[in-house]
Image (cartoon, rainbow, N blue to C red; front, side, top):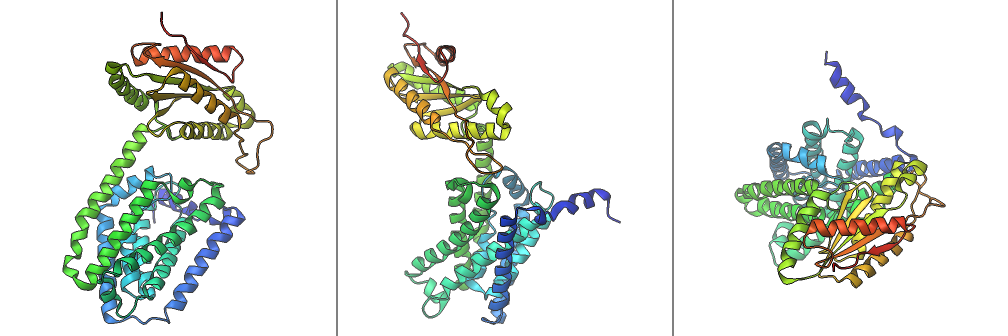
Length: 424
């Protein structure tokens, strides 16, 4: 008899029937479509002996790589807050190019069953229905990519080795990505109401990783089809790529405030200190903006912490949009934010602060449950501006000056920008 703790872990994994009806309907449509397509394609293209060899090689490669990188994959999955790239597409895309669709389905199901049992099974939030849905999404992506591959003139393997094969591979990879990302984006939008591209399609770095993974998958297919003894050479660079992505995720988690996506206080101070060190020898002006979200406790108490968190994210989005890419935006904790504007005079800094203040006034928040705009909720900020070297010689002095100016703005009625006069 299995220990009770295992039953308690596995029992709640099937929570699919508790999903909102639109999400549940969409999941079922995708899964039924994938199953129907698999059944239909099983009769379209027969499986030959060489196909079984290719399929066995891809399964062996995929299982071997998954075992080698199991701990890395688990950590990467824990740190992911956008659509996750697990690198299985190296083998599933290769299967779409090399073997009949029904055998590509076998490769996909075996690999995703393995990653579920060995890596995802006991991870919080990764329910079994999500694993089934992800498998079906990959099946549809494989079938779409295989459909493009069937348009290749003449012998498929020979065509891919010609110069024009690069264009064909680019088309195949694009179709695979579009189907995979598009189907997942719809379910994220239905389940969470997210509309930002980074949440729906993943960040630029995650999409870059997916592109690299698909490119490796195309190389694996070409090597297995023409020079199979060279295929194992993809393992070392693929392993290093996997680990380097984890390092990047760990660095991101250590330096970024998870609620707003801005720099956390420690990282902001470290980078700001370096900026001051570069600016001081040349007398370059550096502006600091201390920003406080007015009446934030009232927002939390009246509308709940979920709306309060949304307010913080929206204000952070305004800060990113209204400053240059190389300016430093940080969250100092609670409802306080801080900006460092390099090579910026006092007049320009005040103009930026006024632009940010006006943009925050235009924000409209939505109810997390209904998705409707919350009537009567208007955000405002109080901003203090101080500029080096007029307001101080180092970061701490200018920060104190900006903080004092911000309190003057709050004491003067809030929703204002105040600055400090230069030292005598």
